[in-house]
Image (cartoon, rainbow, N blue to C red; front, side, top):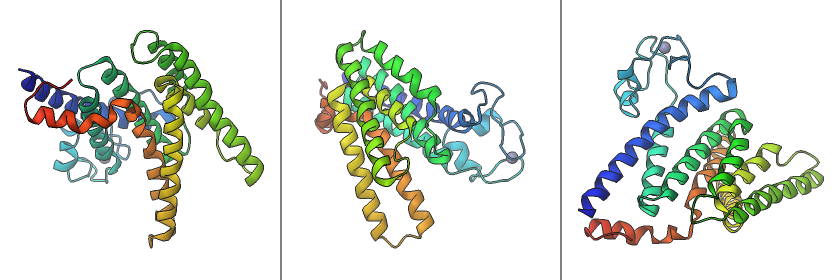
Length: 268
Ligand SMILES: [Zn+2]
């Protein structure tokens, strides 16, 4: 019975991820433009024609329409299926790590917020306050109701996360004589800190910088054209946001859990 529940849960969570990913695309497009995320219904940004439900199925519609608008045939950005697939994949991974638990629920919400922020930042170079500021409050409130993080840990996470980026930004602006880290980065780190607590935000930021620096070095050494290199760098750099929900200690037991599911044993 556990096996069946696992398989059904995996399918449901992945599908939910694809659907939320589709909605995330709307947020990524509309939030920086100060448009409502609910109204009007999805439309083609070129010809403004309303998108029919049949053409709005995550992943499938993009493939069936061969990446073009049904009406005006203008190209649909590859970013749409990428965001959907990425969200679906991350929901699946979060489930495989945390199972049917409150942690899965909290971390899929955090993951989605981070994916939306990462892509808005990638496109517009801004981190929207409308996500990060409520995120800080929500992360803090959640800490009162869940067993895996205390409100003290959450508030320390806000202070440590925001504080580290603030200090790096100040030192950076003195050394490089220009803004190294914006206020958006400070609020984002505070938000992630609210969800993860002070220990994991330190590890997380450290890993983030390490991954960013490594990606930078590899790209500089590679033969990719300069403009493309810059874009690739920022993509990798911002995708680091997405790994934050995996910072819990249970991470490393992902593989045994998957093995147990495959062997039809009850995962812990
Ligand atoms: Zn169109």
